[in-house]
Amino acid sequence: MNIKNNVQAVEHDWEITSANSLFDLKLKDVWDYRDLLWLLVRRDFVSFYKQTILGPVWFFVQPLLTTLMFTLVFGNLAGISTDGLPKPLFYLAGITAWNYFADCLTKTSTVFKDNANIFGKVYFPRLIMPLSIVVSNLVRFGVQFLLFLVIMLYYKIQGVEFQVTWVVALFPIVVLLMAAQGLGLGMIISAMTTKYRDLAFLLTFGVQLLMYATTVIYPLSEVKLKHPDLAWIIEANPMTAVIETFRYGFLGEGTFSAASLGYTTLATLVFLIAGTVIFNKVEKSFVDTV
Image (cartoon, rainbow, N blue to C red; front, side, top):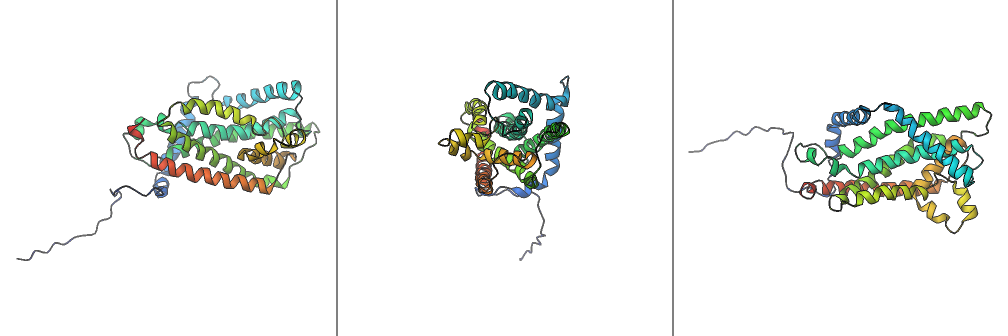
């Protein structure tokens, strides 16, 4: 007796398959879970300042105190050049850009360790977590950037000579480069800290040292003038072109180079692609090692 089975095609939301390709980054899943991304951003913003006295005012306190300290130590005591710009304005420009990159890097680097309990219980694209950190830090960067614009306006009213150049149009690209560098490097380190926990301590120290190898507290022109043999080390740092472009765009002082910005863009793409691939590989088995 012949039995005919009528099979009806059914679409499934999830599909269980064998091991995925290393380059299967599940970007479609990330887009499908975009609502979760915004919820995580809101959670980070609210929870961090919920039980503080000053709340979001800390957004302003940190860069202002750092700028004051840099002005006293590096500007007044050490006498380091600021390319003819007012010292607080020069330092605040570098601090604003550096803080966003450093926050994205340090907070992304502990994603696996900080969220091990959630990752072990609930499914969602793991890439959502580091992306939420980058976006939530963007809010903080926006507030500090507003402070920078206010200080700019103050000095302009005081008659200080500086000018906004056409390079300011590259500002969205500069922000994107800062975010992508922090995200890419952070994901690489996060994957490594699942086995080597002490890297998290090394990173905190390393970020501070890296700042001194970037033009946050001194201009690139000063390095080329006084230490031309060491200038290549500073220029090799991908964040140098970002900060110099930021200063040149808004203040008209700095060393802007399309070639340097192109080098930074290429390095950033390498960090981002490598970080995403490594993160995607480690997230499949990190629960066994964390």
